[in-house]
Length: 518
Image (cartoon, rainbow, N blue to C red; front, side):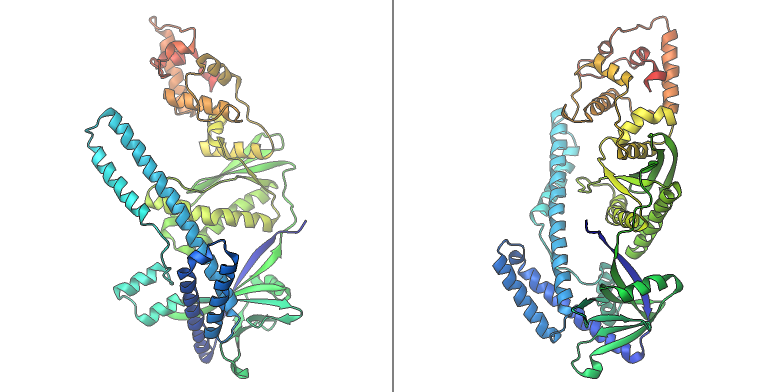
């Protein structure tokens, strides 16, 4: 079986001379100009690019390639530029598809709300606002389409539009990077970029003269990078990205060198137990269990204000938090079990929470998986359905922990192959209630009974299963039992209305032994 390839990226600080800075500026300008031209050509012919006609697509690619090669003077940078532009356009199409799906769900949700309000009161004041919102979303949906990309970050584009920065400053931020490949083919090294043992990087320019064809720029390697630097020197293929940043009023240059590394040998497996992880948009919960599925310990790692951090700062912060998860697994000498999550968001939270969730699902999961592979930690993904509800209904009284910790406990058990059977007391309750409430799942589902008991509790107004709430209910039950007027129903259906709701809450709890029930 072929080993999975992982990417390792190192960042080196470049130290160009004054003349080298001018040459680098020329490369930045030409490379990004060609990239914008290439993307514009591809965007204008996007219908051909996304069509199933292979001949037409090949002709389009050949046409774009020839035009860009003419501008670049046959420089091989064009290959990387074309690949980046195609990836960017595909990302735009994926965004458009998800956005349409999201807005259609919004329209359906608003229509359902309008129908519900109409059924109760046709003159309700809320209808006017709902109709306005529905019309606005439908207009946006009808006009939704792919738009040209503004190269350069939105932040600097807005600053330039306001006149806060000059045109030259905007160009520096807009044309802030270019990428090129370095690889061996038939014993010959590709001329785009080359890393040398004397801590020098060779960069291909756009000149044809022999003495101006290459640019040799020195860089520094710190102590922690020496091991990976030696690996880069022996790597068959690597990708180099040259970037420039304005730091403390000084323009600094960096080289990001990425290369493939093999997947590490698994050292932390599921032989003696597992670590379960429950993801939330602002924290993660970890549960440690032994091989028999018994709960041992738990740990929570919270995320700060991700929405206040910028892109690179967020990524570094999330990476730091994911390192804590890795260290916990290594400390317990166990593999990690996570949920196989799907992030097709069909509803909206507030603006800050949406941004937190988006940053989390794009960065955290991908980082965690790669860190597990690099550290030799076995990783399993399990079905995410009903982990929180099973933890709450089955284990809340036993451990008196938060729902998220109990969910991670259920995830860890599921990763080891344990099945969460419905307790006997719940089966007895369902047998007494019967088919009054129809659950959302089909009978063939493995979580049908859990769905049935959850819908029954939710429909009956029972929402909390924390120990403090249970104690209050026990005290209420004792009060009812000591009352001379209380009646003991001989079946749970006696305490339910025709709609399945509880008419007499005390009578319902009067019939159930709370201490065994929860």
